Length: 294
Image (cartoon, rainbow, N blue to C red; front, side, top):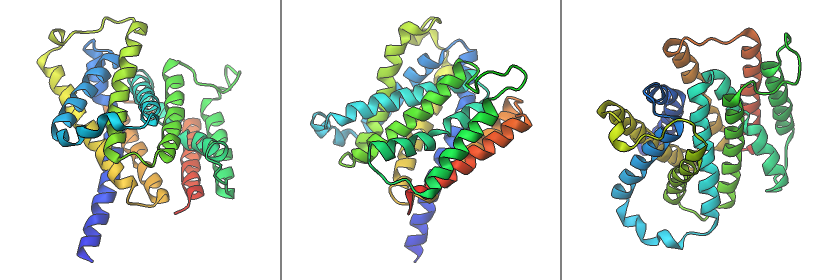
């Protein structure tokens, strides 16, 4: 009994730790941005550190690196865009609006799972779709300017695309059940590196070389890298040992962390319509989790 309780504790802790990391990770990235290190550059360096540390820790697992199936490339590229666009969005956008637009991801997952994986959408799934769309409409609609309820700037479009990328990552992961957890983790980390390099020509800011970065900023990036690696491994450990419904609900802790952190660290507040729309998106996420079943 004691062993079972300890295992359950570490599973829940892993998921909550991951949610905590992603709910607060925007703050050190913003510090780096204020120091003149763009989101693309900071992502490249933090994930380079992550990959370097992981290669040392998991050196024995490198033996089968060239025997991985082709699907790992698509997983890496999609996950890479997801993580990079999320970081870029969270640096320039309002934290909670970015988070909530990202949390439309259950809507895209339901649609992809229905048409690509041929999974049956239950009543709770349809409720989730309607609640997501209604929540997004309320949050994005501006009665003063009118027009279509769409993201209002580049950061919010990136947040929306990150949510779509996260959904596609989940679907690819489901179809790639033959991949090990470590292989998936390396695919994510390596994917961010590749997408970051491909994005450099489109960034107007100068890409800083290592000697241009201060010791303090290197320390911040090292801390980010350690948290990113730990969060990835903890979350992967948790999602394979807990029901999909419980995992999805625990992930919502990220929104709580982000709401508190953005209020105290960035002095950001949400309007009443944003709270209503965001509340509907959260409800939709819970219903979407119920659609997956246990």
